[in-house]
Amino acid sequence: MARHLYRCPLRWSDMDAFGHVNNVVFLRYLEEARIDFMFRLAPGDGSPSFSGGSVVARHQIDYLRPLVHRHEPVLVESWVTKISAASLTIAYEIKDEEGAEEIYVRASTLVVPYNLQTQRPRRISAEEKSFLTKYLAEPGENAGTRAA
Image 1: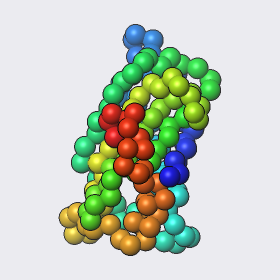
Image 2: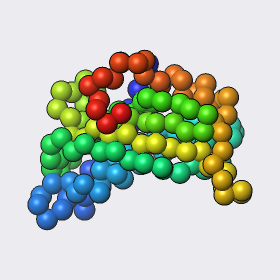
Image 3: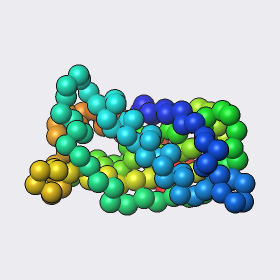
Image 4: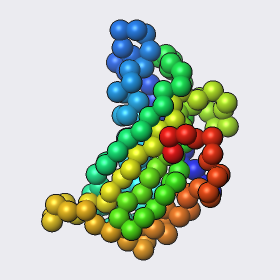
């Protein structure tokens, strides 16, 4: 299984009054990684995959340790834990570098493809499923990721 890697810069404004990255900002980090994964890496030039819209149906986040501002970006690793006919679940770990033991956040997002014209959910296309399957974890492969 492949993992999508996204290096996310920290901004001074990400910190809260307690001197660490605010919990809401972590959702922005996940969003940046998810958009990079689903749209920039969509298969083929000019492919309509993922361009029709999607909505977040659920987020689940475990905050494991505080993150303070520094100049180095954090690494957001993303992979797919479930693909159904009309939704997918993306799991994440936010950490310092690939293979790092220290993890700041474990999270998952339930994403529903959405048709913006009809304002209704839609099914995952064969092309989208083929792309997502490359990032699909085998059962038990990510057992350490509680939120996935």
